[in-house]
Amino acid sequence: MNRLTDWGLDSNTLLIFMTDNGGTGGVRVYNAGMRGAKGTPYQGGTRVPAFFRWTGVFKPGDVNRLTAHIDILPTFAELAGGSIPSGVQLDGRRYAPEQKRL
Image 1 (cartoon, rainbow, N blue to C red):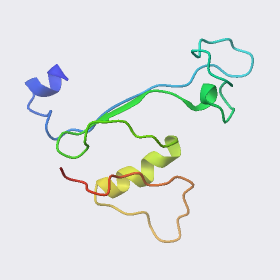
Image 2 (cartoon, rainbow, N blue to C red):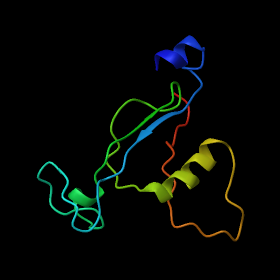
Image 3 (cartoon, rainbow, N blue to C red):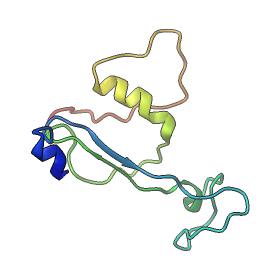
Image 4 (tube, rainbow, N blue to C red):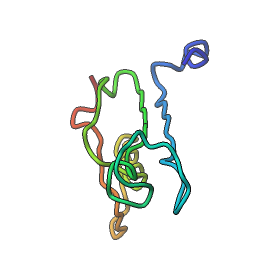
C-alpha cells in the first residue's frame, strides 16, 4: 500500500490479496477447527481470505457470499466496462457492487 501511495496509484488501483485453502487429500493443515477440508463444501474446505481494495469503488466491509475463483472473470469484466461475448457460457457469477462508484 505504501508503494502504491508513493507512486500516486493508491486511488485508482484495484489491489487484490488472495490465498489458497490448504493442502489436498490427506495433507494435514490447520483449519481453525472448521469442519471439512479442501474439496468439501464445508467451511474448512471453502473459507479462505481474500481482500479487494479499490478506493472510491468498493465500500469497506465484508461480503457474506460464497464465491470462488470462477466468479472473478465475470465480475471484473463488468467492473472494467467489458462484457462476456454472446454464446460464451461461464460457470461463474458476477458480484460487482450494484453501485460501482461511492
